[in-house]
Image 1 (tube, rainbow, N blue to C red):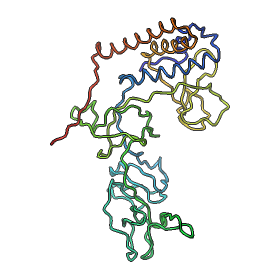
Image 2: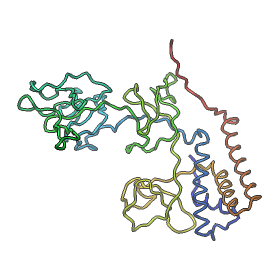
Image 3: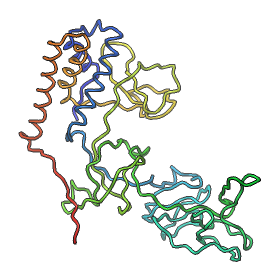
Image 4: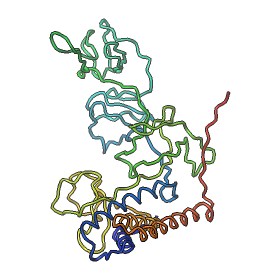
Length: 358
């Protein structure tokens, strides 16, 4: 994707708002920063621009690798690519989820959307791998370490005396909980580069390469993209999330940057770009290390954003006539890019329709 340098975008906007870029006041720079941010969001989400739409193969949980998970903590959910299944660690473990024969290790349990385990019995001595349903907690459990006999409950009850509230904690010496598997793709997955914005489709194969790919039913929640009947990995078509361009100057002495913080770098000078922090507490230099990612503004947005943000500032100056001129320029810039997309390149939006047989 062709990009425009943020300082160049700011310069264009300043000049169209009757300001000198070299003499831009602190207040005007702050106003323009917010107006640019608003206009970027508006045009970014106006339609599915090809530069911003991705089709990516996604899993519901991170894929297990021995290097990444030299030790997996209890309750960690992962995708075991070796055995093509999702698993949960029943306890802290250094063991792989499965062996070359795809046999699951006793420290791990296979995740499913539903289970049909027998009820726990106080009179049964359970071996490693035994799975039960415990009615007092309404949860499912699996043995990772064999008890010496019967009567070792999956969960221990405790509370206040007199009892007003009762709690249960897993008997982690022998048991690990196996939750019902929630098939969702988080909007932000730490192992993926792109954050998911507007979702337009979920498929059983890559629709760019396979014309027989089928759309899969999905719905959106606060957790992410729910795909209750999806296969182990699916292809998600989505628009990249609009970046935040409100920022501070990079401070080389600062060591408490949070993921998502945006800075300009170099911190001084007429030319600079914006970078988003990808690793908390980094002391690395933006533009020279993977701890920072470049905030990318598509080049095709430059005229709409610069005229639109200039119109916003001129409107605040009560220069209504000049604001109207720039607003009209912004509208024309948007119409021009839409014309190139829809008429000249014939990239009208396509929809996959799911049908139901009666």
